[in-house]
Length: 306
Image (cartoon, rainbow, N blue to C red):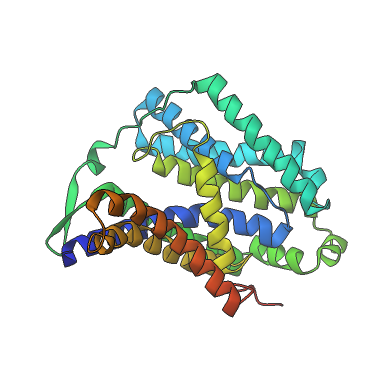
């Protein structure tokens, strides 16, 4: 296996990790700060992709489509929280799991009724359709854009949580809801903002992935499982943990799908190696999670108690 191929696959892993971070950042905010288990997070990712595809077909503008994905799901998340999920904030986690799982089933059927069961394909913007040269190697420009967007979001979330008044309220509300409420802060609306922000980030991930994957009902279900693995590895409630955990999972999964078949071909026939290799690479992510939890039960970067 050539070093050039490994480098390209490492970049692919970085790009996949950034997409996972966009998903994990919103989910870890909601789960870590609100203690709310939202299994419908993958459905919000799906709606972000659909909103972006619909906006792109209507306007032909990629920027408008990305904005529609983020803003549309931000508003949708706020409506869902205020119209139903807010009653679950103080309920048992089992109630949250059952309710949000029902929303997953409902959302998939709504997507089929509105957009149909057939996949929808978004075209790459012309400016991003070409490849660029990195250290003498050709790499798709759009994947570089995804990496850049993820890095900008990571910095923006850090500044929001650590350097703004609303970030201070979010951190205070996570530590002592009663005290913050006694100071006159509407905890209900603060939680709605957190939920809507997490939903918007999922929608942004869906909008960014639209041009490289098919947009179809149920597309958010598989990535939700990987996202849960990311936040467990990184530390529930930790943005830094979500970022680094997503990069680790993305690189391990992507490189595993490339390296494992190559290694297995040394002792197995190519067809068997190509079948077993990707399965083992997927298993490696869960083995990694088990090892990390055995060594650090709270994850790599648990939230510090304030």
